Length: 438
Image (cartoon, rainbow, N blue to C red; front, side, top):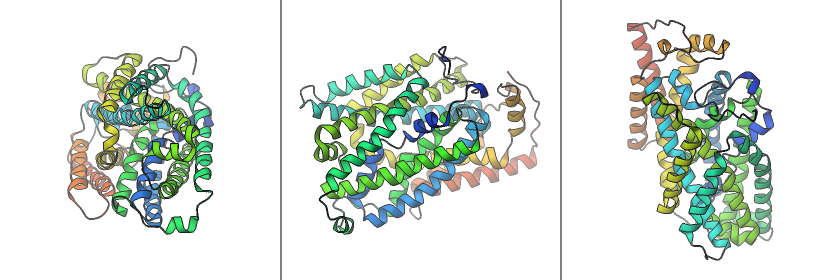
């Protein structure tokens, strides 16, 4: 990206083909979404509440689901060069409906920013022997991260190139220190000591931890150039995040008999562990703020027709996320994941069904893509009531039906409902498209 740097970060336009970036820089940004301490904290929770076999069954099933939807979302984002919230205008939700997507993404990523900032602040406070206090540590961290993210995607790539490899090496080192004197066979056969988590419940919270990464994938994949690159970054992210990081976290939680991530890092490797914790949250929170700003920018433009400044948006979101950290969002981590694992799969399912199966707006997308523009207002629906209804139905089933896997229930129900309703409506009222761009 040029130093002029497109200060709006292409929030409301396509990323041009000549602005696409080298694969590894983009792939490491994407992998950074799962190679972070929130994912490590999830693995520790699984290790504390499940047998190792059950935990890996849950990880395997969830990874297949997440891999399929991530590749689909990434492929759409790469082909269209659009962020998720912008693409959703022509993937079932319409202009106003896309604002709903943007707001949900922004709010949820504020929550993730709050979780990560709380981990960072807690680690910093621990490292300084509690001289600053938790609230002051969180405030300093939140302000610093927010200012850094205002620089844009260039800063994310720079941090990811260093941060992802260093974090994985660091976690492996911490794991070696903690596990080198352990009898692994005994450790793996030991019973969990925490609150019991069922396999279906574990799949839902794993998807909950991952689902925003799937939704954010178009935001990142719009900077790559082909299908193989989308597939490569999807596989890299899932292997590194779900299997390597979660696997090590499960073993460490068993070895140290704790699930608190700061305690694990400090007990396993002292200052080195805390440094890794701090550096990890620095890296991933950049991405949380970046994608949240893109979603909110689309929402405000969709509703009010105002194109707000990217830097201003980032500062506002960072302030809210830091406040959530101080208010104690970290104590509600599992509940937060359960909510994410039910509310967001319907959005992903509907977008994939519309883009790849129903294909209502694929013709106008193809025509406008050739000129590097967006489809015009005449080919942009105002609001997709069918998609909104499908989301509500899917989420309701996810919350209310106890049988099966809640995350998968909400995904399947919303997708099938949207497909069936759209087919019925189309038979009664065929779509007439007048190609137009702006």
